[in-house]
Image (cartoon, rainbow, N blue to C red; front, side, top):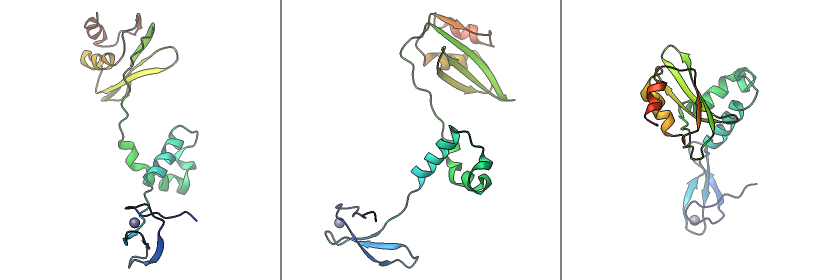
Length: 158
Ligand SMILES: [Zn+2]
């Protein structure tokens, strides 16, 4: 069995009855404190979410035909991952804007092997391209389909 340690002093604790709600209560002989061990499943659930996100399973394959999965992982959809700043310069980068929906466009910049950055906006425009390009070290060549506002944004970077 896993040893339960005191949150104050780290001393190994003993069982000390149950609370009215039925949770195990623990008692520390060292500092005479009593506590219950709250289980935090956030780490576990994040791992489940990431395994699904980068895996091959559909939501339907998950526990409870996906319902349990969605309940456990709903909070992680709110996470907004920020692309890191790219300091090392690529010789060639490719940029494109892809419309995910009517009012949601994602601008993506990548080199031959990796996605370097992305920016989500309502539509392609020069300011949005600027925000994306500002985070990426200037390349020698940029390949673009001439998306709206890209030319204007590029002028600012010489
Ligand atoms: Zn203690």
